[in-house]
Amino acid sequence: MTDRRPWPWSLLVAEGVRTARADRWTSAMVVAVVAWVCAGIGAADAVDVSRAVRAEQAWIEAGAYVMRVQGAIRDDDRLPLPAAVCEQLSDVDGVSGAFWATPRSDASSFAHVPGGRFSMVDVSPGVWAFLDVDVPPVPAVVVSEGLARRTGVADGSPVRVGESDVVTARTSFVAVLGNDLDGALLVPSGPRERADACFIRTDASHVEGVAELARAALGWEGTDAVVSPRLHGDEFTVDFSRAHEERELRWAWVAGGAFMAVIWALILWFRRGQTAIYATFGVTTARRVVLRVAEWSVLAGPGLLAGWALGCLVALALGADARSALTQTSVQAMAAVSMASALVVLVSVRPAGTLIDQLKDR
Image (cartoon, rainbow, N blue to C red; front, top):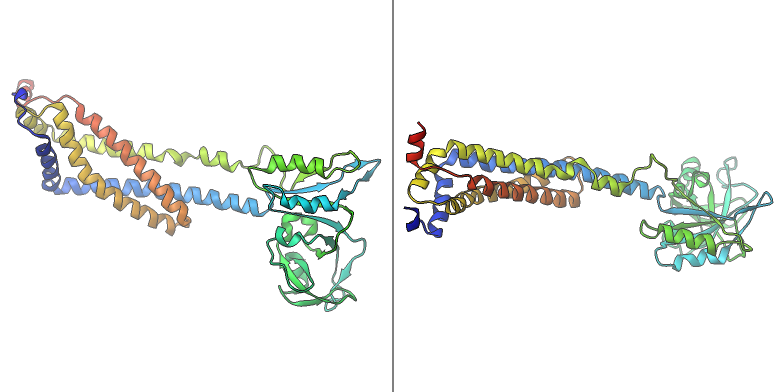
């Protein structure tokens, strides 16, 4: 009977579609399961990744790739740095900003707050680009956020430092340079031969190379400079790249795909009588796979789309950023449905007896 091949491939596909339409409650359950599984694993992973991204961004903004370079200590004295070389490092590939700094020996105060004294640090003009502050067209100074809070100075307001001329105050997050400078006034100054420190901002892919270059280029009289990262790493420091690769929810699609396949296998088990009828009327294993895959595809497609949309909405509602919501929900949902589809094929390949075989078993 099976050699006559009475079931054309197109008829098998149509039969699978008709089965999905006829068994409405079961079909609705399958669509709902696929949708909720895709939405759940997608939203959970998106929120997890988004939190990690925000934590890494906060770490970078706090100075993760900022290096503070100082001269080596010789005979109990710290050597200076070549100021011009420090300023030129901003032109090196992988360096997004560099400037030199030299603290003044005397403190000062704003004219409107005579008692509020603070330290002053001469810096090179590269400080503007380093702190991502637009270069003002008039003489200006950089007021750290800590100093601005203490003295009430607002960004862009005119200030007088001691007996000097009036200059414009530009406030900025200076703590990225070190806690010792949060509360200081940075005064852009002209060229000089020596500097006490050089600050360099780079990125993850260039940090080691830039550190080696700075160590040699900023040396003094044959002695290499000392390069210190703004945020010191140790065994307790989070490696965000490794944490992203090793996160548990990265493989959530495996559990999701397996769960959907188990639900489908249970449905086929309850339909074993129907499967026996198909086998009795000449549906071979290969043709049965086509029939079941056609039915599964009709149900999994809408479930996938609904789950993707729902997962993105839930992820955004839970605080995930848009990029993580779209990317992670798409990856998780597609991977889970792909795995479930592969398992559907395997489940459909399972040998099925005819009605006569079932009667014999009874």
